[in-house]
Length: 284
Image (cartoon, rainbow, N blue to C red; front, side, top):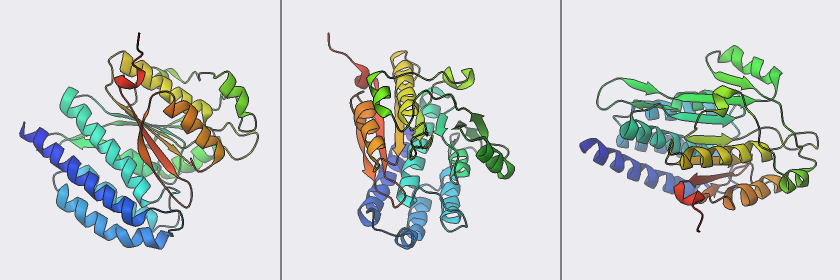
């Protein structure tokens, strides 16, 4: 019970920190310097709140390095922190309630991939043991996979480009949605948290994110209704763009996802949804 109380306190305090960041840092016109000015304060607060949670502290140090590095990620500090906090909280829940490995699926490789690989872990009770979750990346650009794997050879990356629809003809998908058939190691798994940041969707021949989002919601329903998962969180990037906004409305909201909020960014807005059994409950 002490562990549960400690976890609840950590979660509540972390939420307060995130809320503060949201108030002072959000806004599309904010530049990177504004976000960086908040970074040191954020790190100090999380250190004081989460002294026993080794993974999260290391993650925030890594955010600092990446944001100020040569190739900063497209997601900004509040967006990265929101996803990371959700993954960490979900991983703790998976371990504390069912002693199982936590699964995190990321559509797309990017300059933030190392962050996602490192954040998906949890300390076991008060011991120094770490339970490492499974972080799986899906990418449709082979050359980019090779480039990223040269620097991060340990990442679990799957090449996949079997999309049936395109960014230039989204109506065809929404009239008759098609469900992707992913490699079995991904298809048959249940994913606690999903980040949809791929495939590309800004030229007519690009696949867009209709099918990746649709598959993610279908997976959430399958795994929750079957009792394998209680909750699935889905994040979608670039919802400031018309097609992603339509995906949000027609595939996330209409499918019963609980809207958690939106964080603006100079390089794309991020939205979050939570799916539970209530999302798929149908009245008789």
